[in-house]
Image (cartoon, rainbow, N blue to C red; front, side):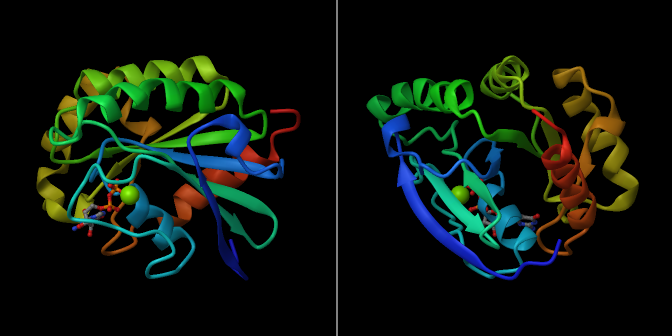
Length: 197
Ligand SMILES: Nc1nc2c(ncn2[C@@H]2O[C@H](COP(=O)(O)OP(=O)(O)O)[C@@H](O)[C@H]2O)c(=O)[nH]1
Ligand SMILES: [Mg+2]
């Protein structure tokens, strides 16, 4: 993928605030601090198109970015951060489900898993919602640089068990080394290419 331009379009919580443009769209989902924003920045080769953070749980908006004037990347709000107020927590599910159910131009959702963490109930819940929404899921195990190559199999096993997905379903990624970037782009481009999806 050659990136010619990147532009923040807007933030939204409700469908009437989503961009009217129905360009092909790919969204990024996963718990707070898993590395969604970092993955997007690596994919578009920009240091800070999307703000990354050590204070997870802040982004409770759906953020839309236009790429090359051709398609849209969507940074979805994270979940699972203990310090987020309960009111915000209770809004997260409906906000996300509404987006997944109503966004007709959604072509794929990249779902991230931290290689060092065992998936929790919310992750599995989200996977179920993604399955229902009709757009294909692209599962990614990220922060792969944090563990040695020899530890990979052992670290990944709990993720495979919890998600019931085979190893081949996952792309392995590191925002630090950019390992896996080309493969994730290929999978996104494949999803864009599917007619009528
Ligand atoms: N070592 C390493 N750190 C990462 C990676 N991806 C994200 N991070 C760090 O994890 C933190 C959260 O990342 P961010 O992209 O803001 O997560 P988000 O909340 O899911 O958007 C930041 O401090 C990032 O620098 C990665 O692949 N490797
Ligand atoms: Mg983020």
